[in-house]
Image (cartoon, rainbow, N blue to C red; front, side):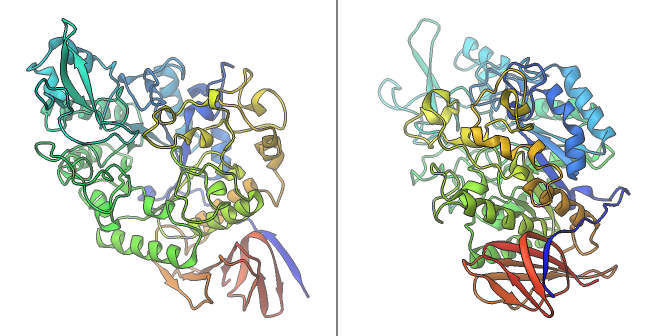
Length: 561
């Protein structure tokens, strides 16, 4: 007898878990694009509050919010002018505190972004540094330098900005003459702090305490690898030094001195109950150097960008999984897994294109292929040991919007010809909630980036309750992941024999049944002996007596009970 399989739901336990961050599923909210409560076309904190029941029912453990602090918005809020204030476009401080309280009432933890490498050029400190002039104490809190050349007309070194062009901008003296230069590894509106200065360290300890005292459960640390620069700010030997996953340590990134900072933050977080955590956005050259950020006396998690950047290829994925588990095992830290975020092309579009194009892609590719692979990749990711991150809208199968008109773009990198492509706007388009209405339920006043007409069919309303939808697959996967005793943080992955292009691994548990994940990354069906009872599949599969057929680009979960 042939059986066609879809999804099977296992109930999630209600009991709290110790060391929650070791196996948590954390949902990234990009506040501009999640939900708009006041109808101005821009997402806000009250909008997020209104959708917390959706996140609870999805089955995630925590929500991470990208910056909503006071900011001129030169880089979508990653240029902060006041770390203790909420930008009016997102609401008020009371809204932020109410969001924390509401999230906790729904059983969700809350992680805030913190941006310690740089601030806004409108920050009070930087404005005072400009007014006070060369040699002032306030300038010591940043990287001000005299230029090279007879009249100081050349930058102090050859560093380049991640966004393109020199990493230095020259100031003007009060009399209008050219002045010193200041360092900015990103946009000119984002001057880098000098973390060798004790006032900078003290200020950020105070900022962390402000939000911890108000109940936040942790921080995602932006550019965690960039705070400390090599002594003397030496020239780099290669103009490739600003690539985020470069093959070597540069004088501007991943300097060993950052770890002293995170040891101090570890002690600070430990002063608070409830297991508050720090998460490093650290683009390090190797998994081993990434693991340095999560040694027992430092942070709790570090993003796995090596995994995110891996193509849809069985050998490459197995290698990065093994390297990740080995590196994290050495420091007794959990692995993290992520497929999309606010800075890269969504994986439903990346996997729709040929391999080797990187994480920022201009072309839509084969939409059906991309969604099929994205669903399979999600089940692979959620079956791995450790913690996982979900970027808003990926649970709907959203693709990148690759045809935004030039006049709609707002990514600052887009306007710097020598820099990145600037196509981050494509993954930041507001997500659809309803099949009709203004901005598909995002808000009553349109959306700050235009949404495709096809998104009605991808909305939460359209997919809710549809057993074959991507949304219901995510809900089921998170329920199974939480309930099955072999899943979660346990370091219990064992690879099984499999044909080329297929990944098969088992995870066992002393408390119950074993779990097996089978992933077909080839373009042809694969026939095999079922390793147990099917729990969940990324697409429909057929099982006959003693035989299963896994379609191309598909993943299936199995249990021995």
